[in-house]
Image (cartoon, rainbow, N blue to C red):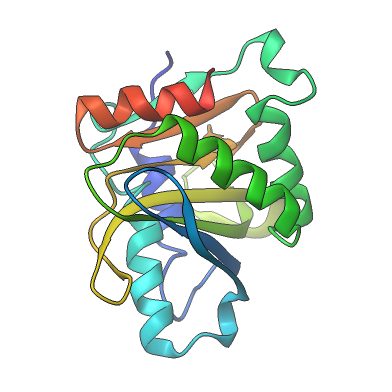
Length: 207
């Protein structure tokens, strides 16, 4: 398990506002407490109303903005995790297609529902974003040139009530990890509000 640089996470969250929005797509599913899917959605992020954009930005931001190296921890994938049918390969494919493949998303929701234990109904929110990482000068001031375009997924799992109204995220992840201001496809930053949720989420990611 590696250490997450808090400044890297704060740099990302600064792009999660209405004016500086880094997301282009949101997808997700609603599941009952037994893990069965009740419904799914998949939309272009900017086609949401400003109110809904803000609600979802707050959900997404909660993952990287959480307590670094306490609630948000870095994990590495092993060599075997790159084999066909493993979660790492599925996450890579979802990142590369920008969440536009509903069949692959359904595979993730089904896998998640089988292994995650919840006390009630919940929702899985997926966000696809990209961040044009600026170069930094020696004095740490940003330069105009871009170092790379970091494409990433944020997943947030929230309890829902009433008409699918989401509560605060219980767990989730940022993939690939944003490490040293760059993409690390062999690592993932995993968030969990409680230790039991962390254990359940690891069962999904590292079966």
